[in-house]
Length: 201
Image 1 (cartoon, helix red, strand yellow):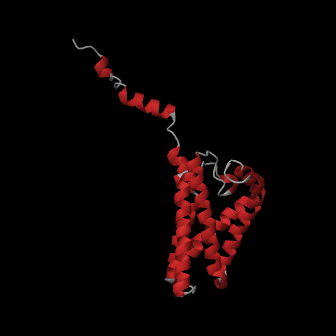
Image 2 (cartoon, helix red, strand yellow; image 1 turned 180 degrees about the vertical axis):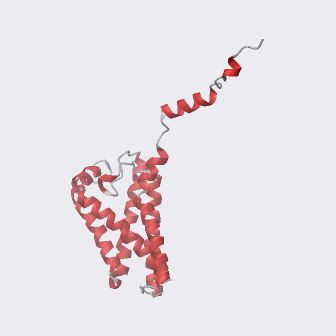
Image 3 (cartoon, one colour; image 1 turned 90 degrees about the vertical axis):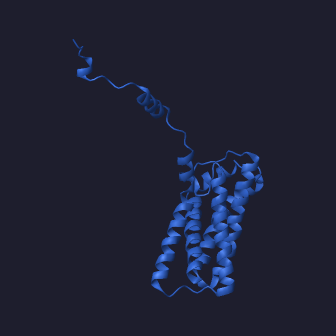
């Protein structure tokens, strides 16, 4: 079970570190993005603009250190569950605000993709916590298992970080010019060949 715990740890470390650094790099735009969520108390938004990325980076650091893995998993579970609750509330209120999950790089409104992503991350944190409580926090000694866990974590982390890009790509409407030309190309009759244009005697 230590290899599965390593997958959970590495995935959460990558996702939380990227998210926290992205928010701190452009903290003003992250704070401005929070104004698009009217259900968040206005007085708390300036503090959230600082506390959220700080908590994400703190959870990533705690997950790196073997002695504090359990605390890091607990903090990650709280953060991801909170993000999931925000996404669900935004959907229920019909909020069209963009997701500030990874700083100013993303501009996709909150949707089911964000609920699913944060639910999966919450599940990874809870799964990792259950494994740590029952089997300890040791790292697998087999290098092949470590490499496989790292590859799986990299795949999950990339999918989580670029969820917004995937959602924007799949939800983008087709370009009218391309669809019109495609339709006209399908419906237009074929051009006659020189032999067909020559009248028969």
